[in-house]
Length: 541
Image (tube, rainbow, N blue to C red; front, top):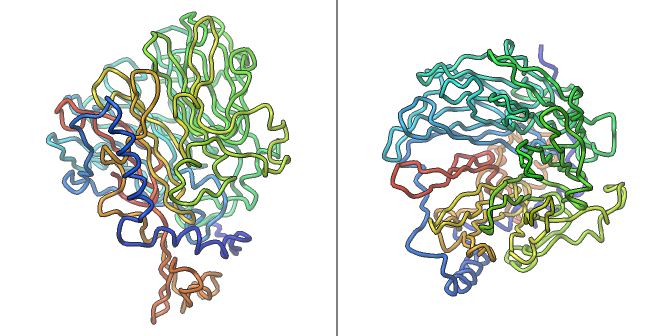
């Protein structure tokens, strides 16, 4: 029997701010601030050599993909400041060996879906045929990796308290659930999954990052666990920490939790991590993100143990990290580290169109010291690019190369314009109840700087200038009559047009569009890189 939450209290102050936060994107046409930003970006780009005759166009309708990302009520009608708004991922691999990359989309409610690439930009839903049906998993992340060295990609999926799962690829595009056999079915607040061979035995091991306890035992619609009212203060409660897990691949589709055995006990509120060999000893180290604290660098000591070497390699790390990528941005043959940091952007209310403010690091002067008990001086606030100078020395260069963005989630890195330099796509935006925020495309200008290019290459604005969507509906004459929005939304002028109630009592609440994850790949085999996103509470781009 499912226990349901019995009460709902709208977060203090949020009701009054809805006209400012949501109604800023209510126009059916491209907002003037987006048009102006595009104009300014075009002027800047006209002086750059990195642009040529390439452009992105949204082909979702032609692709046949009908997947819809659906969110729990804590990110909608019962909105709370909780980690559910971090959304879900998307991953890609050639699951059936036909030479075409397929797509796996993750969602909180409804079903995760596997879409087979038919070629020519067309896809078909093969979730059921592939053995991957899994309704209302409250899923977060996904990763393809060949865990058994049989030449085909297997699939790992993380969830919030619904059990992580590992699916073995049987070699013909079908999968079987081997979670129990493999021993990786941890039930908790999981997020990221990083496959890497930490001990050099030729088998991919697995790090699962855990966020921390941000839910109660009450259940909501779809079986999700209702978030704690103080979810975003969880890092101030040590008892809510949830250690990430390092699984050693034993072979034969079996894994063993060796976290404590090898000294890797990381209690960060972590959404993701990345492997990086910081000292060039041939053993991959781990950079673990902390969305509500400082990141950690775990040094791999010969594939036998890990030790926290953060202070040695990264004396200051971002506070509020969301995603990371390792790549050689400046072409010197050394791998650099790029980290996106979103939570500091929640402390400042940047109005639409203030491009300069979005490109600056967040001002933390007004942030209560209690939020950062370690002291603000220990951290960096904003996206950071650590240039590898060799000899284990990393220099933070984000301001000089121009990689600061607003409300960023995870980055994707690849050579989008085929000039030999890796570029960056950054999924971004906060959705309901905040204003629209743009995705970013940063084109690499020969390892010297990155050029903001999302408008000039067609990623922004969205088709038809869309910035909003219906976020949820309520029956204000029926079951939802006591919802705190029913009264104010009956007078739409008082809410700035963010919501309305029709004669039948149906309330429609609008929310801004926003992306949570993206992958770059060549979908149609034409030699050009494409971008596929997983939107929050909407279909992909």
